Length: 148
Length: 42
Image (cartoon, rainbow over the protein chains, first blue to last red):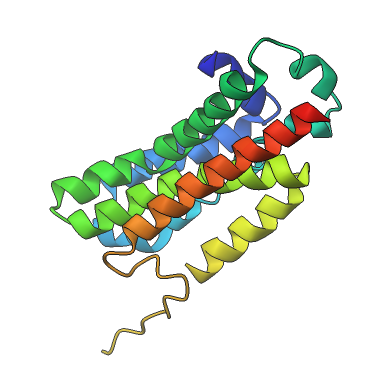
C-alpha cells in the first residue's frame, strides 16, 4: 500500500525531476559536510515540495472523495499511510545527510534534521486535509524554508 | 574574516528545540486526523 501511495504521488513527475533529486542525494554522500549544510540540504528539503503538497488533498483536488472514502476504515488506513509516504520522501532526500551528521558526531544537527524530517509531512498533511488545496502548504513550506 | 550568521527566526537551529518540533508534528498529525474525520462525516 505504501508503494501504491508513493506511485500516486510520483507518477506525474518528469524524468528531470528525478535526475535533480538523484543528484542531490548523491551529492549528500560525497560533498563536504559544510557544503551540504549550506547548499545541498536546503535544496533537498525544498525539491520534493510538489510531492508533499499533494498529501491529504489529492482526493479533494481530483474530486474522488466519495470513491476513496468509501473503502473500509478510510481514516486509519489512509492518513497514517499518507504521512508515512511523505516521511519516506523526506527520509530519501535528507536521510543520507542524517547519517553523515551521525558519522561526524554532530548529534545536535542530526536531531534537528530528524525533527525537521518528521515535521514536514505532518505540516503537509494537516494543510492538505484542512485546506483541500496544494497552495497553502507550498506557501508555508517555502516561508519556513526561507526563514529557517 | 567574520562569518555572517543568518537570524534563526524559527528556532530550527537552536539546540533543544527538537522536542517542540516533535510535539508540533504530533499535533499537526492529529489535526489532520480530525480534519479527515470531519470530511468523512459530511
